[in-house]
Length: 121
Ligand SMILES: [Zn+2]
Image (cartoon, rainbow, N blue to C red; front, side, top):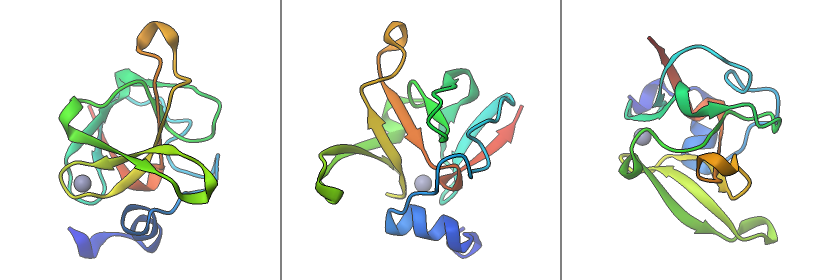
């Protein structure tokens, strides 16, 4: 699969890049399906858990299954943030913020479109 990554996907997944807000493929996508890791195909998020955060990045309240998405402390850019990674291939997905919908766990998984692929239902 590795060889199939576009330069943008490679930059985000392997070099922890971030796409510009409102430029990705999925921030405004409302199609039903499952979002897979663009690096390894693991099912990471479901469209049912996607919400409009207004951030310009696809946002989810939770992973498809807890163990599919790993988190790590990220202290780059003079901030302490929680990085979200694909637990299977270690690919960088985005960050987790504590400002998600309160009635649905309160978390926002802020994910780069380039790191995921929608498999439509
Ligand atoms: Zn992966």
